Amino acid sequence: MTRIFEQLLAQRGLSEDFLHPRYEDLFDPFLMQGVKEAVERIEQARQNGEKIIIYGDYDADGVTSSTVCRDALEHYGCNNVEIMLPNRFKDGYGLNKPAVAEIEERGATLVITVDCGSGSGEVIQALSELGIDTIVTDHHEIPKMPKDAVAVINPKRSGEKYGLNMAGVGVAFTLARALNKKKNNGATCDGQEKWLLDMVAIGTVCDSMVLREENRIMVHYGMVVLGKTRRRGVQELARVAGCSLSDVNTHAIGFQLGPRINAAGRMKSADVALELMLTNSRSDAVRLADELNELNRARRQAQDDAVREVNDDFDGDSVIVACGDWHEGVVGIIAGRLSEIYRRPAFALTRLDDGTLKGSGRSFGEFSLANALQACPDGLLLSGGGHAGACGLSMEGERLDDFKKQMNDYYRSLGLRNQERFLRQESDIALKDLSELDLVLFDEIQQLEPFGVGNEEPIFEFSGRVVSTRVLKEKHLSLMVSDGENEIRLIGFYVPDEWRTVENGDFVKVQFTLTRNEWRGRVSLEGAIISLEEIEQM
Image 1 (cartoon, rainbow, N blue to C red):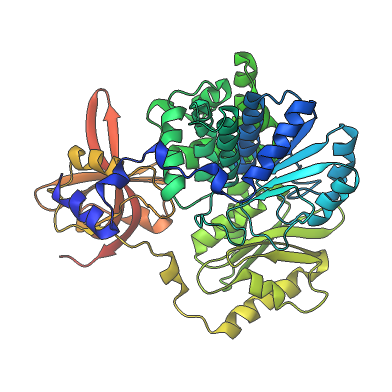
Image 2: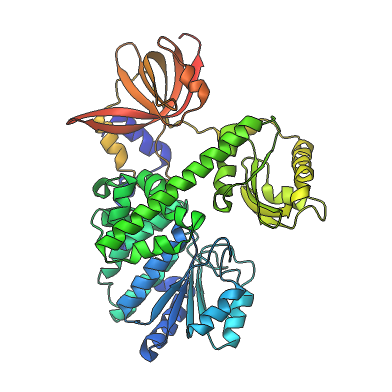
């Protein structure tokens, strides 16, 4: 074990056991509240041949949760199962009242929610009055326990022993493990449910869950299953995303596979992504994957166009409030990108056909969007809500300037200072030189995968001289930095304008993660730039 890797393990308080997760260490699914009642009701539905409707969500977690639940029910012997996903633009998030009539019309007697349902007590009550039972599987906050549900499985339930929050797909997988255990008369699971872990890995990573404990185990084995996945849709999704499933990592899941799944719900309908996950037809998988890729391209283009439009009009406000004729499905991404670029809270709103404005906000640090919206005077907003870092809102079109003034006045009233400190990423290792960076260290670091929230990829910091620099396609950057004896190539994608002004001979302080590059059979160690700043000569 290299000295640097030993230092990393010590700093993070990790033992060698962390490097080798064991599937057998997952908790007994029947120990989670609500699981026993859910399995009993599903068993009843199986025996009676009842129609079951899975009700999901339109993002990657919702799509993968729905897939896991459908596959688990069918493996258990439930042969009359359908999936309903809400439409972001018509239905909004979660189990909603208009869905009640459709569920009744489809003849269902049992609804299983995935990645939603904790705040849908009134809808669940309406279903119950029609003789339709509901099982809730979810991971969101529970504003009020839905008392008419026959079972509620949610890590955030009061009294739940398992405090680590899972994604919706992790909760669905917990139910799947329980069903498999029941099918085997309480004996050890036969392992069939492990084939669902490809979906669990995608949904968990894309929903930014803490990758420790159960989540780490599920994603670790999920990446193994992704390398062997039988799903034609996932194979074709990897093709259009340009990633290899044989050595997939969390970065590929989060930045290549996930955005394409999410693009369906953002730009059209999540049904496209769901169909891709479920299809057994190679030709359909090719067609659907190509469609998702095109939707993602359109999403990225809409996002980039909006950001350029805002760049032209940015006036230096403490809080960005931007409005344009943008696709409703991408306003959240636009707000996030603006906050990232300008390093301040941002709102992005689009004009609807009726003249109202609808949008999203993104923030960080000590500026809470939830508090900011609550501070708005009566009548300014038509609707609004969320949490500290993200929110949704709507208002009359003529109130845009009032809202912009209100947000900036509120920001100034807080007297906040140095909010950018919340955006700085701390380095794990400050290097005196580059001599200990090699492929052996890189391979050791890969044992820490899966990387993500709570187990971030190690960041190295180094100050040295630039010996070569090249701007690629006017938006990317390639640098070679040296300590006088050793060199490493560093790559940055879509870098800020000021990074591209660095010249040969400049001294820089740079943060980076290690990457492996293979070109024409030659393997080399490189770095992915996290931050870059020019410094005085050392």
